[in-house]
Amino acid sequence: MDLTRTINSEVENWNIKFGVSVNPIKPEDIVKNLLSHYVEDVGLGGQQIDLSSFGQGLQRHLIFTLIKLSAKYATPKATKKKDFNPDFNLILFEEPEAFLHPSQQEALHTSLRTLAFQESEQVLISSHSPHFVSKQISELRGIIRLGKEKGVTDIFQVDSKEFEDILDENLGLYKKFCDCLQDQAIDDSLKQEIRRRKLGDDEFNSSLKLDEEAVKYFLWLDTERASLFFSKKVIICEGASEKIFIDYLFDEKWPEFRDKHIYMLDAMGKYNIHRYISILTKLGIRHSILMDKDSDEGVNQIINTFIQDSKSELTGKIHSFENDFEEFLGIEKPQRNDLKPLNIIVRHQNNEISEDKLEELKGILTDC
Image: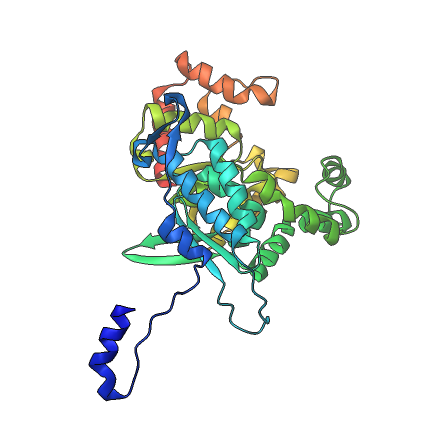
């Protein structure tokens, strides 16, 4: 070559020779230098369109698809477990739910989860979507919550040991009722009520109950309840009646409560309140409680006392309505419990709940 001959004539006094060789083309070189991508809009007869012309939802879905395929088509290399794996992929995904419909969020979560369980792959995402987070509840220990207070950001995560501790603590009320059945000082009528409601057993069955506890959060922390992860304060209420009516009042009359990032949590019964105290405390979420005293007798007295004793350092006010929520509001209860939320809303819209009672309820919520 004239080029090499010319160069060598210039450097021959250095006793070296300059040469040029042709390297083989690697697949990644082809992808990088010889290939370009484009998008065709089928609706426009296959016209090539710039990707920026499409919505963010499609753009983000396409980006994720490429990430997923990068793992699929990567050439695997054998490495010893004890050695550092140079092929380890850490994928950081910010707000993967952004611009996606709920069904698309579910599909994306499934794909990310599948990717995360592959060897040499780890996925770390940030999210503000209760819908997206709720799909991760079966792996509750993989959720990290950040909380900021007085300029300091704290990190909360339930590790394996803490999760086992939560499950053990959650058996406390069941064990309390089992102990009552063995207590000679307890009246037989109360024991019959405990057995009728299946609140306890004559023999404490910890293994079966622990198995049940392990799946309860998975069943309960659905898309709606997963909002608690993003709240600054949770008010645990006993049932749907309180939650639905108070949420309605927040939206229609008292928007200032929304500004405080308060979430109303329906515990699905007084028997579950202590379970939410446990998980909220481990996640660093401050909370208060609204519940009925139910005359504070018999079984209800045992439950009321147990809830008081279950308070943590993050539990604030525990307010108990003397009998129940309907009596406090001054309205009659329907014969069917499933109609209670509807009954309260309709009676409020018919002006059957006095303004004085609403102001009293607002004061209670402010204290909480």
